[in-house]
Image 1: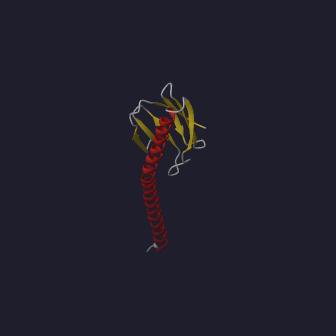
Image 2: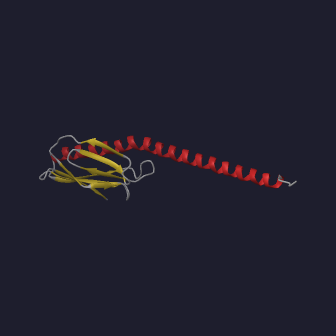
Image 3: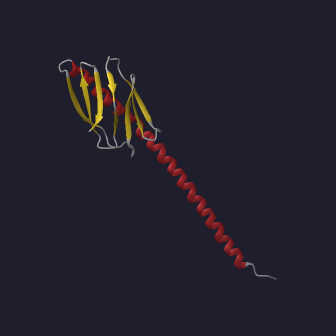
Length: 145
């Protein structure tokens, strides 16, 4: 008759270690998914707030065009939103704020004001930006300082 007590103990420890690793992997995957969901939940309204801020700068530039031929408006945007850098892009109808990976974004519609909006703003450098306006061209150009 053979004594199998030693091998049974080793097998128990191997099974315990395998189950421990499986539990650890489950916990890590669950919390990484929760983090991603939390970042998305927090970033979306903040992206919209930045877009609204940029929209207000455009409206202010339009008002300033009535009294001045050209000039600029300085403003700052948050350096990061939900731990991510982001970029603000313009087209003829929308302001779009998105992270560099393109996973998270938010758009705000521009009011029809007969103004051409040019440039992009990135939060990666300092977050300080300027909106140059020119009443002759009816344009507002955004640059990062």
